[in-house]
Length: 116
Image (cartoon, rainbow, N blue to C red; front, side, top):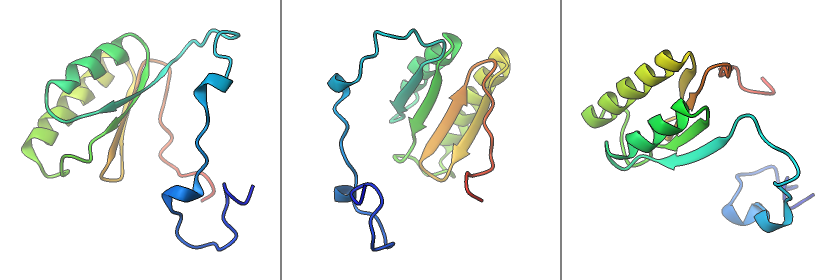
């Protein structure tokens, strides 16, 4: 447990986290109704795959670290993804300067952080 929650209480480093072997998890035993997809937005072309995933009912967490929030391209991408969220009756939120979360119909994003 000390590898997950360091005793020092200081800043966490990459080495403080434990890698989970995905082969050790039996995903075939249960059929999920909603899938969580991870994406990286490098350019506008990446938005197509994200849109398709949301239209198919997936929640997408998109890494936007390559763009600043003031970037014109990022503004267009965000507007396009907001439109998708509206069309499917989903939700969209930006977490910090590095992630966009887009959800399909029936999945809302609670903007209140846990533990606060």
